[in-house]
Amino acid sequence: MDGQSTPAEANEETTRVETALRAERLRLYQAILWTTPAAQGLVAMLLVAVLWGTIEPTALFGWLACLALAVGARLGVALRDRAAAGTPAAASPSALWRVRLLVAFSGAAWGLAGVWLFPAQDLQAQTFLAFVLAGMAAGSLTVTAFDLAAALAFATLALAPLVVRLLAAGGQTSAAMAAMVVLFVAFLALAGMRAQRNLRDTGYQDRIVEALVIGIQRYFAKNPPLARQRQL
Image (cartoon, rainbow, N blue to C red; front, side, top):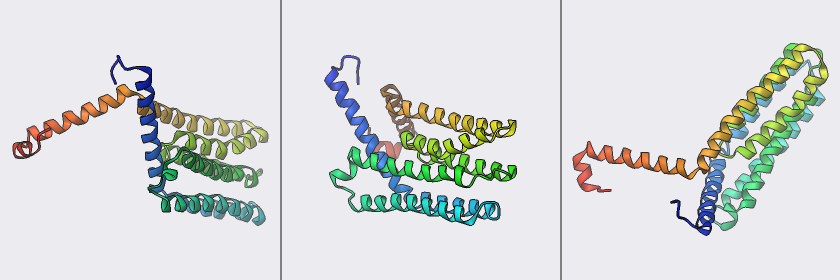
């Protein structure tokens, strides 16, 4: 888009980019349809196994039930969306926001662990719980980096209860642990925000396209037979 474009053309370009990004985000969510629930299930079972004997079984099983409900709801909606692939509704803004809400729901379920499964008298178990929840938040910011709004919602809801609980526990160690968790996830979030800005920047997009074209031209220049058959 050149500097002489009209406001209408600029709006049209923005709409085109947003539509393409939304379609790609929905496609990528489908690509991680099974790996995300499987990973969450494995981590949840490991967390329960480590905290077994430290936390009451009723709290452990209650939390597992909440997490299973969140993950199951997300999986069920994703399968329904996959069956409706190709229809206008499958790529609508509401479809993306529905997925985002379910991602946030999963984050809230993990956040409950910071309250229900918090081992007040066991610093080693607290450290492990903080490690697990920070890892889940970091994983969300990495795996769903293509949709930063959902990734940030998951990370915030997963970690906020733990941070509040650590600060309420008092003591320098708990406060330091809470600060480290916040700083770690904040760093990942800033990196994700920068990547998202680049995706929307038309200058950045033009540079990517130009680099691809130059790369293709150089490749065909080094392969004359192919260059004669496929002219750009």
